[in-house]
Length: 90
Image (cartoon, rainbow, N blue to C red; front, side):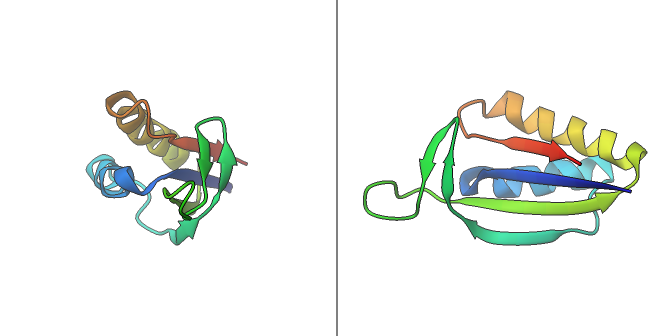
């Protein structure tokens, strides 16, 4: 069993969910709708200085499904390279 975390700007949330659905993966997930912090794409604090916010998806799945999730997220990252889409698998 693997834990896949996707952290990205709210602007691509629908795109990521659609891509997961199109690939037939990530059917069961936990969504954290408001995530703040600073990463390589810059701060996302949801305040007056850094108004953008991220969201996070956590998916527990088998290795085969994780590969499909990675492919779906890679498509979104390619289409929106400046939106700070990150994927972590543990």
